[in-house]
Length: 147
Image (cartoon, rainbow, N blue to C red; front, side, top):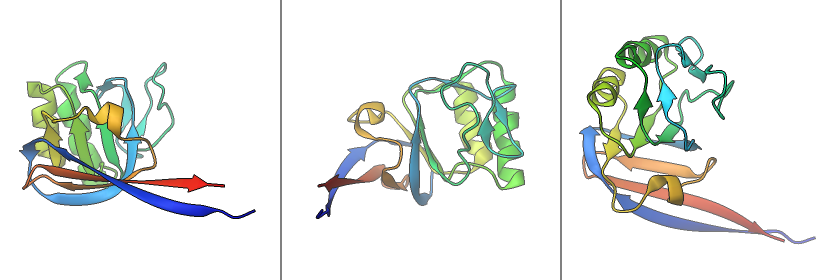
């Protein structure tokens, strides 16, 4: 059985929330993430009971999600992920709110919003994503295997 691997690169443009450059494997959810009571900052894992990513860690990954939900504790919990070394490498989200803006700032991970294409429709979990928040560019490398 022959297997060939092809790569496809997709480019998105967005608006900088927090500057910097980072890359890593994408972790995507179409559900909002709750900070206070929704994540465990010790592991960088989602712990919210009914969340599709329950038990999955975003540590070192490019977190792609619609936005934040819950209380102002969101920023505190994500700040703790930075202190514990379990923060996402970068964050890409659709809805800008004050809680997510503060959370992104205290996490210090490159963060973008306001995209020319919906990242929830373009990016898949496992894609390799390079985020250049300084230039507002996201490069998504998708590998497809044909048998």
